[in-house]
Length: 272
Length: 272
Image 1 (cartoon, rainbow over the protein chains, first blue to last red):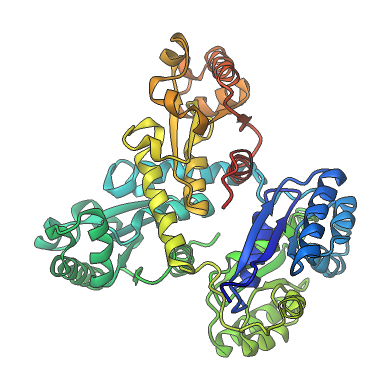
Image 2 (image 1 turned 60 degrees about the vertical axis):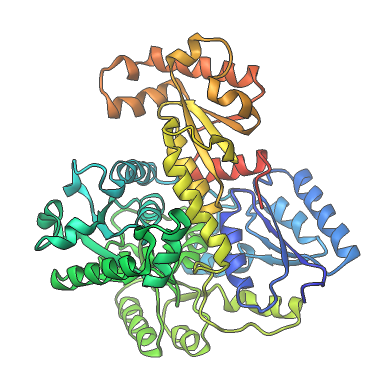
């Protein structure tokens, strides 16, 4: 199918476009077809802007397969304008809002979406504070206020601690620190000292030796640090440490940060 | 309405639940009602697990207002089980997938969603590399490989550089650095030296003096740094610098990191 014309896909929104992209892409992963040409048009605020997008879509539709269009526009005039396009329109708000109006017994506001706006100011501020905390406590840099962490990710180097910590902070406002396990930690008895009073907040990451060796090779080719032998040793030692201290852990080798974050929130019961 | 029983809202998924939360919350922001009690149940992998969730929802429905349920489950058996619950079921996959099947001329796979899985390994890896780059180049820490940045966020302290940079890296795989503007930068002529050859990659942030003063006060109460006078001076000087060098900029005072990121991607034409 690679020599076919890519199917145009549009994500349209009167706000950031994040919701349209998220559900649109989720729906598209349900199809084996993978030759999509994606365009996001956020902040469509006027009927004129909407009409310009419709013109582009209609032009494409006249020349090839009809574009697939995911829209989260909520304003009535903008929605009606977009609905006239010659693409396959998947109206993510219009399709579902009626059911909610009936369930909640009140009409939808039709105000431009601010699902990804500041929303609840206190909650937004707590996410920003959490990012700051995560930056300060990355890779065991600072042990100050480590007890304020809601979770401490523990793992050997390059198992995914940093991006997972950032994701937990930025998306979920979780106070997350992370702490690297190194050779000296495996030589001594028990947990690294700063973690001992906080064992209940620890969550371990591990990986597969081959995968870890590949990732470390990209950083330091041919080093002992990247060797399969060293990676195997560190991962075995780390897992032993997790098991002997009752620290829950997961293997990061074939899961994404989003999947790790969802798993960690669930297992540590950190969902608000 | 605060003394009413909160309306239970469930986000159900056979994957991370991110998509269900995203579209569900977007839809809920369309209603003035704001007394929701949200629960996310990710990774529903078996009919038994689905039935356990249905039992919980039915119990709540028997005692109070029917829960609102957003589901992105794709497996047929799991969807049919969840569909029997006594809540208001908003089936985000089922509602829209038929239209896409017709447009694409092929049936949906019904495989559990991996929209937030590793997906395209190269794209995932580039996001992780971008996070690493952003960590190294936060707050002008390292000028090494600054020319590799796709964007350099420039602003006085506490205008939102760091979380916006992290968001661009983590969600969009953008190589983003950020660079603080300080008093010495305003005293000299022109842009700070490291930025001069890279002015085309710069994007400025500004804020409102009062808002900035509040944010800085949280960090250092009563300091000259947090004073309204100093904040006003820095913001005016920064804006002058942006304008005189043709650097696009936005005011971060009342927008979220998601909105800033969407605006920056659009204005710098960084959408893939």
